Length: 228
Image (tube, rainbow, N blue to C red):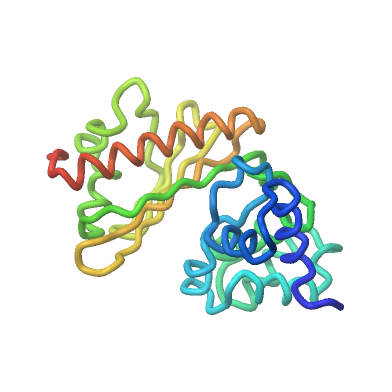
């Protein structure tokens, strides 16, 4: 089997859409540039991030999944195999990120489509310690300063300081989960997923919404404008 067949397919699809060279298209995909601008399915996070999280870059993962016959496997079976490789839970973020990105490359899934509907991811790096970022999201008083009513429809399901928080959104038909990671003493990143969305249109609307809200969170936190 040709090595990295699935990843090369993804690169060439972007080349067709954008007119970029192979090297340019590959570089943009590995950087996880916004998928909707070119119409090309994209990776969930940059190559650097997935390598840090799992010990493998995207091209290595795609090569491995191709060798497993991933194109003939269900989402559940791919996620389980990836999880076994990483010694983690199949529903964990890393296993799902690898699985979904591979399915996109293989044309097995639309951008934002998940097993239980559509889902989107938005992230933002903020120049504050991870504890401050966590508090700005999980504390209702702080959160209302960047996610004001009536938009604040989050009902907490579970929170683990300062790593993650899970919520019902609105009437509970969709879910929001946020992961937090330190990037040194004074920088941290929040990665938000909104899951179980009804269709592609709703997914695009919520992705734009969360990008805007996380940008507001970053601006206010870095300016010292969010208080208990």
